[in-house]
Image (cartoon, rainbow, N blue to C red; front, side, top):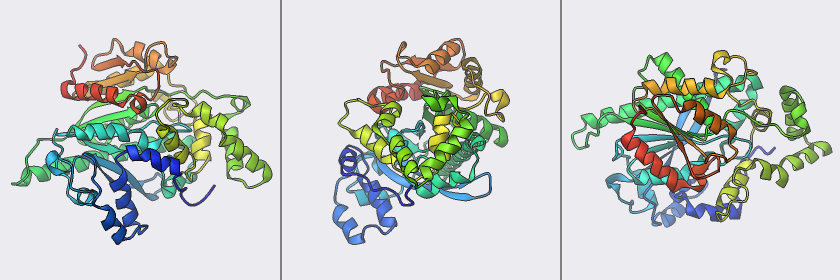
Length: 423
């Protein structure tokens, strides 16, 4: 694997023209000295979108004591609710409290082939245009930052689950602290409208839903509720928790397979290169890319192909995903990664968290009969639970927010504005 970040392909750059990304990438490139100030000035007159995307940083403390510079995105309208004069003005101005008073934490799904934070960017655009502030977070190991991805190389596969739960716990606590401090400053300022206490909503997809659910429980436990009092609700989009293993490799012990296959992906021999060509081949991409064959102008495929080439620790990412090491274990035996999580057990966890969230939890599941076993089992188990709303979408995709963004956005707006718990 290469030690430097891959350059986006021309097709990817063309597809990104649909996304409100220009001023964000300019700011990042300028801070890294990639482009000159003169170039920045020439391009600063380009109009920006209603949603301003900015990069922010957080010092992630790993379990081994290492501190990693983790980068995430904040999306919000420019001050005054109007489009900023130009891209440079948008990234330089201070962000006010969100007009709606709501902050949405968006966390994408994770799988062998996914889109990272770009999965949530279209949804963040729509939400920010409605006056909300959005944080787009992503999984370490599935970012475009080599330093963050390769920090996982220090971890053993059985340690991944606990490390990720701890990471999500830290970042959720950090977001809550930032929002609380922002609200406090606004309350003291005479020339700033006080919009009351912050209202935080979590929106997550796939297996991320289970991790965020448990991270929220962990934060509430160690802070005695102080760090979670501003979290109002949680939306779980197509929650999953079981990996299906394919082919001959499925007959091997997951740990043995992960180590052997990972060493081949890192190797440089002729056989290693053959294994790498198979791993990056069209057949694997077709099997693991959720939106393969979707007619969207090539945007989703281009983004996934670019992130697929990112520098990373293969054993702790690709092999972990293929071997099921990212599957959350049963809550009763969280220290045993071999324990299997069942739908009734997860439903109880969801119902328990929904009881202390002011607006409860909504589960968005694909259309019934779409072959989404995890979602159908969980939906049935949650029907009778109080404080949980189960909604079946018309889409059959496990990632409906990428291909039917407007539909998901409409449901989110309804949920956050009403947020009634089921009787």
